[in-house]
Length: 476
Image (cartoon, rainbow, N blue to C red):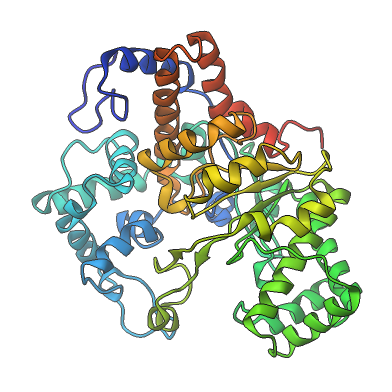
């Protein structure tokens, strides 16, 4: 065992039971240095296309990470004081050193949270900063981080290689020209950065600017998106382009798990109503549900894996949304009905082994009651890992304990970091590997699995399952 670090103990997250801890250590040694496969996330492809140094500690860690600034906001610290830009360009703090001091002063708020685990890992293990996050150290840490970030070793591509990232998927709208992905391809760099197809802006009638977005889709594709056939052809055309640029998956952030199998006439009516801004909330949900079914149907032709991330009440804080826009830490989990919501789609495609649909949830009450039985039966379905608010030690353990008896390990898809915070990627994967090793060690100690079996499963969960689930092993 490596010597104890004052910041990151080598046995962190393992059980306090010595028998379980010893087995977890051995399992973790088998997976700790495996390559990282990041099949879905929100890092900026321009980082890898342009390969420019990150600006400073505040720009890298705090401003893009709603996990961090939502906690500070909850304690009464305003977003402008944290350097978060407003929609109208009104005054926001531009002194990033001052913002960093605020972050450091209130860092104690993160005690016991996964955010602290991730940030401590990045600060101490990636950046090599050997002082604690205290206000009296704020300027020293800020200057040390910035000095590291200005070096060649901390450019995005160098970090990508240092982190041993084998594959990293970003997420783009169908309206995105994927210019940065093309630049990466043309550069000759060997880093494997691909895209994923996120069509929410053109399939959700309640997405701001929906009608204008669908009009832009028409301009890009040359299809008549005012008609149902033209609209579907335009989406298929963009999917083909994304697949040509490396995409293996689509992603959908719908409020519910509703799916539908409507008549053509009803589809035409809902599309027209959506473009005119005249749909009720129930009709908008029906339209999104129909588009989930259409998405899966399209995957019969292009083999893209479908990811469904439902159950978030997006932008719950309306005044905050109006002032700052999306993704400002105000998304709240909701109860989600998978059994009834998915039935129309599953009746149509659920028994098709060629298709793959990965389900995520923010409703933990659905784990053993709905999600595990569904994924434990339908060939099309797999369960994504504990997501977002539950991407945490306790959340991951709850996921395994409530689903594994019905799904087993092999109807799940390994780990998915789903992050905007590039520096946290190795920390998140390390956390997931440690928790899976902890859970497997429990099973070994209870004589429910041999240690050799646990070793195989640990490697599968850390590396092999995600490559299979997202079809990274398939010949292009």
